[in-house]
Image (cartoon, rainbow, N blue to C red; front, side):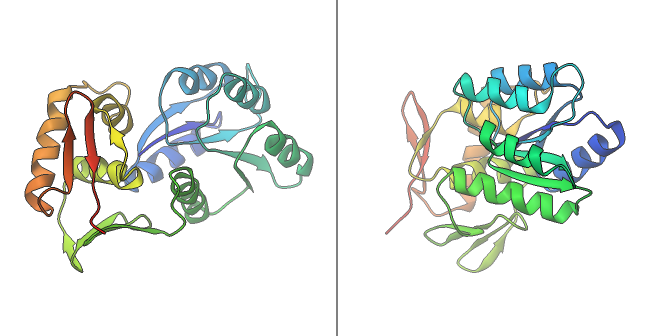
Length: 220
């Protein structure tokens, strides 16, 4: 899963990026509203953490521009604890959630996980597909109740497919959501990860939609 962090405080931005990376997310960062707006407008993200007090363009303006352009990714805004009017303005501008500073990192991660799940239509913290279960809180995957060992990229591919089970997911979508922007993106590596996953998962769980991508098919 890929997250955009738009925060101008370099210390906080670094801490957020590190924590999200440790939690298994691909992270892109921007430190002002103009760069943040550009990234959110042209790149695909599963969620955005957006500070409102940004230089060059404030967070509310960034959010309004995204929504006006049809960008629908979940957005969590960060506000000052006593700035209740910012929370109202943010929600009215199209934010999906908010968190007041200072905050606990565990709560931020939990809220972002929930936003990503809800955006994909999942209410529970555990997403299942037949005998395969993904615990979005820990990033652990089990098969028939037994823990499944996956590499970080295998987990990212499977997690994205699990969040979008039943849907055809293109190679481009997978590349956009499992690699950082500066990473040398090669669509052939997606086929390698899919091949590895197929060896670890039940047969026929991941189907190829010829010319379109892949689909996770869950048994009834």
